[in-house]
Length: 208
Image (cartoon, rainbow, N blue to C red; front, side, top):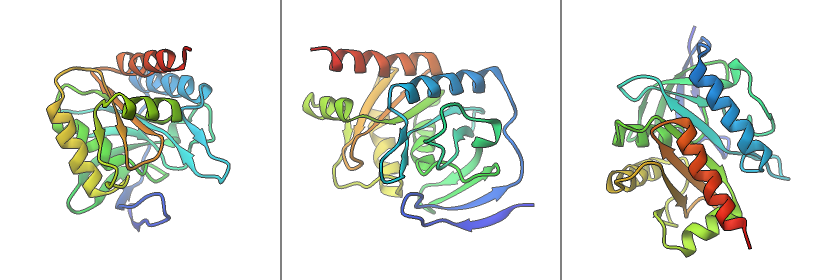
């Protein structure tokens, strides 16, 4: 049985419709979970001292922009269990609404992930992390970035991200969310190349 959940906890800013169920296990999901653990171990996914979690990952599972994404409030967990993933079946950027399958709310950045998948059919993985080093480097280097006055988790962010992605020609791509302090997003043709792009950039920016 589904439930209708208007969510406004300061972190999730969309309303959602949930349907009972669990994401089916797969090799692709296992790979995504291992990538998430690697990012967790480097502090790119986690929880701030005030208890607010950060970081989320997703993979496309169909040609019509359905995707599996990490659930909200899972930043403190090193390796996720099946029930800590959600299947986003549909979303409306203009309606600020997400329809998903799972026992926990889908990530606060679900619409941003969905906008990327909708903008490019060849994108199969999206990773959102937090890193002061990466964030500062990307802005200083004039790398692709969303405007500083566009807040995270909003329709405006999703629209802006879709425009940014449509303008980029290469995969994988890494960009900063200037209006979401420390927020960095990578997207690519598969989980491995997207993860590698982030870690390679982190290594370059962390090397004296």
